Length: 115
Length: 117
Image (cartoon, rainbow over all chains, first blue to last red; front, side, top):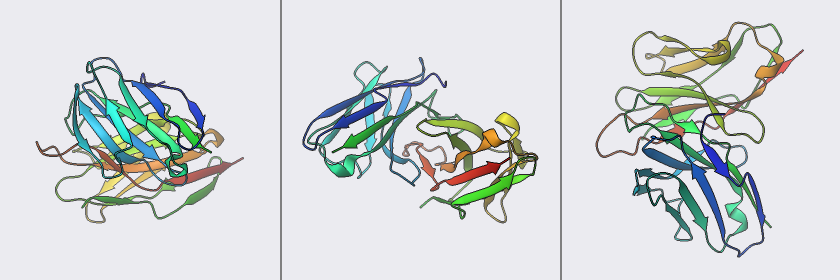
């Protein structure tokens, strides 16, 4: 257990539905990252927060995706009008600061299946 | 652009034998390199990292990695493999610290390690 939690662990939904995932980082970690991992691939960066500010979004993050970190603590990732191509593992990671020497600690992930 | 390559999709080794999982990287500037392990339906667990200093880095569960700047490699090693080491291993590089970058990790595609009794 890294101290990063994600909820739910698994989500099955029908195409066109909206889904929301939650990530609770290690307390006092001020940076939070979202990654997406598809089968047979390494995780790919989606977006990140420095405290409550969302500072960058990958081009993988279409306009159907939105992420928030309202109080600089937990974060949510919402996917609207889900598509089958959204099926993946969504991973959250937190890090104490932005220093390159710091380690990102990952949560267990949310596995999304879109039928 | 920075990238990481793991040339082997799968590595098979007998229990008790040494193991090596290969990783090569391409970065501008000094690399910050990481190894993570992923068990089925789980998130990534940090094993070790190279920032600077000794080329041989020791990490969790008896793993170590050797940084080789001339060969741009960061291979993961363990002297004696255990069946419980069977998992998916990822090498990653992080952008050097600058005010304009995200600090995101860039991952290889992963290598499945199979340790047989």
